[in-house]
Picture: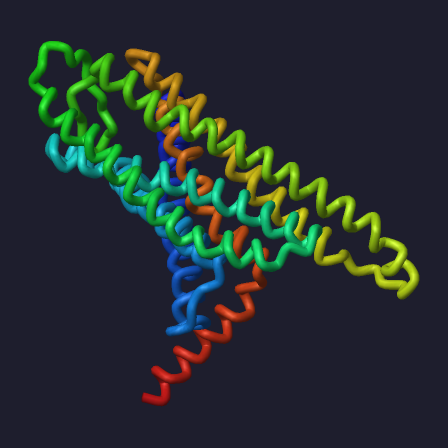
Amino acid sequence: MPNNRMYFWTLIIKIIFLSLTTVGILGNFSVFHYYLVCYGDCKLKTVDLIHVHLMASNTLIILSKGVPNTMVDFGLKHFLNDIQCRLLLYIERVGRSVSIGSTCLLSVFQAITISQKETCCKDQKFKDAKYIGCSISLLWVLYILIHFIFFLNSLIKRSSNNVTGKQDFGHCSIAGRDGINESLYAALVVCPEICFSLLMVWSSGSMIVILYRHKQRVQHIHSTHGSSRNSPESRATQNILALVSTFLAFYTVSAILQGCVALLSNPSWWLVNINHITSMCFPCFGPFILINHYSMVSRLSLVWMRNINSLILK
């Protein structure tokens, strides 16, 4: 009986990983396809530019973590050597860091945009928008370099006596932990991520307050016209809350579970798999929040139908 129950839960985990990976890849590439087809050679808007880089970082997480974990659950284990394992971990960490930074940048930029509309500072909006591209590039370069330093350092110290234990990821395993390396990682990666999260909460809270005050000022206009539809400000508030709360919820749970896995010498099967699932949730569901927010479904359907019709005519 226990074996049957374990087989059942193993099957459920396999289905969840396969579903998350498939949905995540389709969602992210659908958003890429939307921007590629709808904008073409035109310059992307500032918010859309942030979305593209956010989807790119989410795709890195899915390909470097979701795909290998799915392969492990279907029986293909330890198919990567030490260097390949560290390289995959490096790609995943770069994607995670850029995803957090891009989400924070999106939240802050929206807060600045709304506050400028409130104060009618249109010239300042144009000046601020010019720095977004530089900020995104800086995020990529900074985290690529930081994580590459840790990648090289781990390769150099893998035969050192200071390294203890072993980390098994299922698809590969690497030599365990170095105390100095972990302290530097906490200072250069974990602390900035916490600051990004706090900044995201603050900026989103500011947006909600501004939008709520604006809604109160124009509410009598909607009631005069007898409109029962939600105002654009209300819809914007709901979408901001959805994006930020989804990110922070999954990020917080994932960070707690990762801390538990790191502290325990022999974490349980349940803890490891739930940790993998929660770390995949935002990269997989994030594109669908954007699709719902910008009503991309109808446009994507038209694009796909047009492509199918062109293939049939050929």
